[in-house]
Image 1 (cartoon, rainbow, N blue to C red):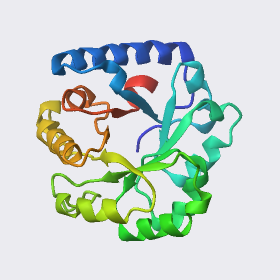
Image 2: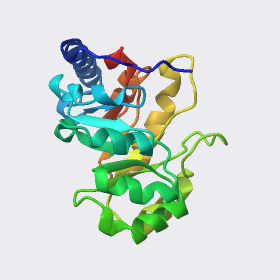
Image 3: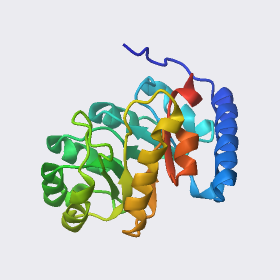
Image 4: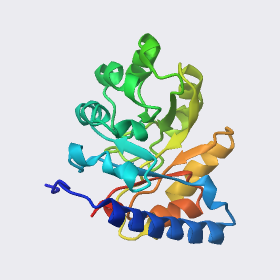
Length: 224
């Protein structure tokens, strides 16, 4: 079981964030990209709720939560409104109404039932809401996400704007092992003129940036 992070020092987080941005800038240089194209989303799954407002003090702009109950708790805290909130976990269709009032983006749309609930409850959504379609680029049975050949149909039926795509590659022994999956997601987005690519976590975000990530989802590299 992963241990919860009970206390953070905003100054230390700010220092780590600056180091991460330096690593992103270096990856962008290798790929001939502008570092301004890449957003850092801080995953709050293992961060105790009362520490969340301190992220804004550290210069964090975007927070992502995996669990609906934790999202609702954390966004209600004084100071949490200084962060842009996004939902990054697996979304059960019955939880869609609970998520919509609180987030600017959902990273994990990948089922007909979620599409139906988005349609039914779109009046609850924030005006700026957009979504990312989660794609199972590797075809692993245990992975969430739609198959690449279903992508056009899902985009066409999505009742809210689709900004881009998201993926989680298979477990890998080295970051380089994930490169082909990131490249595949980039290509799927490019032919559909989708601008947002949410891919890359603490262990492989530099490779993801080299392959076109515009959002990297980071936790332990910043908070521990």
